[in-house]
Amino acid sequence: MRTLTALEPYVPSTDKPWNERRIRHLYDRLGYGARLSDLQEGLQLSPGELVDQLINQVMAAPQPPPPFWANYTSDDYGDDNDMVFEHKAEFVARWAAAMIDDPIRSKMALFWHNHFVTEEEVYGCNSYMWSYFALLYQQAFGNFRTFVEEMGKNPAMLVYLNGNINVADAPNENYARDLMELFTMGQNNGYTQTDVVEVSRALTGWRVEMYECTPPYFDNNLFDGSSKSIFGRSGNWGYDDVHELIFTERSAETATYICSKLYKFLVYDKTDDEVIQAMAQSFQDNNWELAPVLRTLLKSDHFFDERFINSRIKDPFEYFISLLRIAGIESTDLEADWSYELFSFCRECGQELFNPVDVAGWPGHHSWINENTLTVRWGFMSTLLFSRLGNSDDLKGTLRQLAVDLTDRLEKDPAVVTQALIAHFLNTSLDEAHAQAALQYFKGEIPENYFEDGTWTLYFPEVPDQILNLLFYLMRLPEGQLA
Image 1 (cartoon, rainbow, N blue to C red):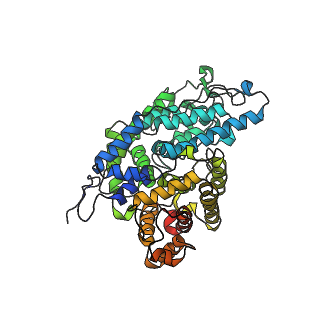
Image 2 (tube, rainbow, N blue to C red):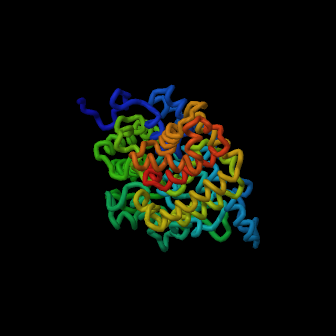
Image 3 (cartoon, rainbow, N blue to C red):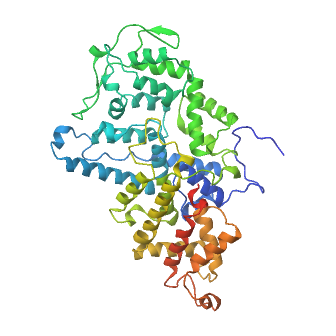
């Protein structure tokens, strides 16, 4: 058996074939699940070609257009709090729709939202929320150093971590500490408390009038122009100098920390040191561009290893959104108010969009599931299946067509249809006991002789309801929580 280097490209083989299972794995990790058309197209490409195509498409896509209120200040809203809430709700709903229709960029933006954490409850301005979101989208596959440099001047971040009150006479250490601890180098990894103090002084002068919701600006009168010592180097350091020092003097620490987070997000919660170091070297060699690192990881034999398929617990949005995408449903197929229910249930599950739990973000993986959040997941999944999908003839038609396309349109064996739907939605097979239970959920109350004498086909009137019953069962299984 040959020894693989850390990020050697995946080459399909008899033991490790390029098939629908691995294509689903790629779409699960990079986005919110694969539609049947994605699988069919992916099989016509090599693994590397598919990875390149997905990333190239995202990077070439235009940025989301700003809402008309993108630059609204407090004066524009006046005392109309209802308008403030309405604009915020509409925009959050827009992100939910993008998770279905633009899944790869949306998912990476959510990853960075959980890295460069801010909380809307703290900064409060809709224009700041848009500015922050736009930066996440713009740099999701871009240059990480530029990302960091722009994030520190973003109004949402300036308010959230007190950069707006960091002035020469009274430096505030909050952003300086988290810049190194959470955003670049990692906790206690190459910096001291003295560095925190000195970096905070170097970052002074950036201001934002949070109660007016006006754009940020630099006030040189509030900047500490005296000498500072950062990482043992002295100078009259300012904002740009801090980032130059981090990305040169602490490049190895930064590359390793960020690649570790990317690995946990895209591969598995426990990191592989050899792979992380290979990623970190690529990150530095490519001048902090994210896309080359992501391409190399996602094309690797390591990424497509069987042990990582279905090994991550879905976050709440992933749990619900992926079902819709895998079913072939578009955001425009859903009623306008569906996203409000989605946000409510995701919040109960511990994931409120624009409001992570704290500056360290949502812990993820095992933390998503406990006895309370699991029942909330099941509850909303039931609502989504039977109240949203089950009350729409068009959506029920979509489910029927999916079953037809997954099997022979003349298929009359419910076991064959059930197995095809299990593989499509769970990307795995079930043990005999659960497979038989799934079959019974699919059969429902249809008389057994209908299956035996050929009366039942995929064009039987009850088929969409049978699929909903099956999904109700599948999404409650442990396998239904995994990606």
